[in-house]
Length: 112
Image 1: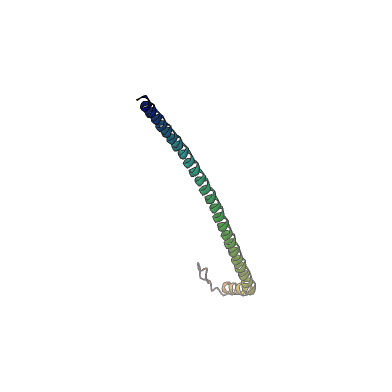
Image 2 (image 1 turned 90 degrees about the horizontal axis):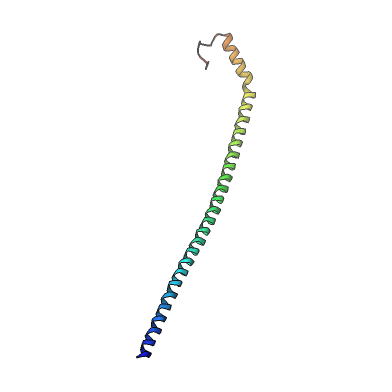
């Protein structure tokens, strides 16, 4: 009978050791999972930051390209306007003078 009780106590002690080991493993797994989750979060944050920098870079390139195109268009338009002015200024002056001299201006008519 003593050996049976001794054997029951041994089994109980082993069972408690197994339960204790399971609790330690559970705590360890929880810690491992939290660490892995943190690493995943950091990886996602890093990738997100890289994508943001890439998008900003692409947007900056597009902005610079658009700005350059606008400047070129502006320069071409200014060149065209200046050429037209040089070509037609004498005619415009003569027409304005003739209108004034011949009294063809109607009062308040700025398009005459």
